[in-house]
Image (cartoon, rainbow, N blue to C red; front, side, top):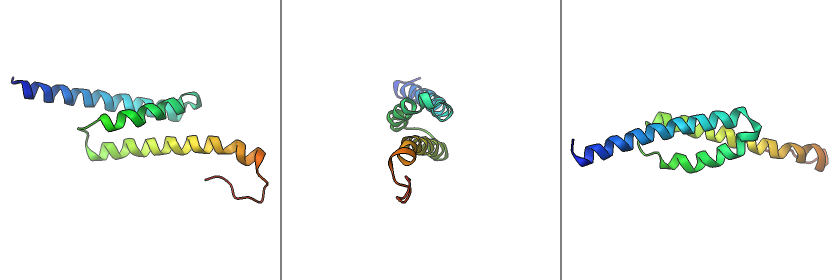
Length: 93
């Protein structure tokens, strides 16, 4: 096996492992309030590093990442709506 094909094989394996890690971190973040912010930050850095992933898979990962961001935004907004704003002001989001 020549060097280029070996490197391509290694890169493909790394991409598969990264996708698995990203999926796990997204699921952790969506399931656990305590893990959400860290999971979001990690996935935000890791996702662009994956080069060879089918477009449909990338869209699913990006969709979960957006859902996690939305949940984080809603969590930050709740105390603001509940405690600090008059009822007449529009709510967050």
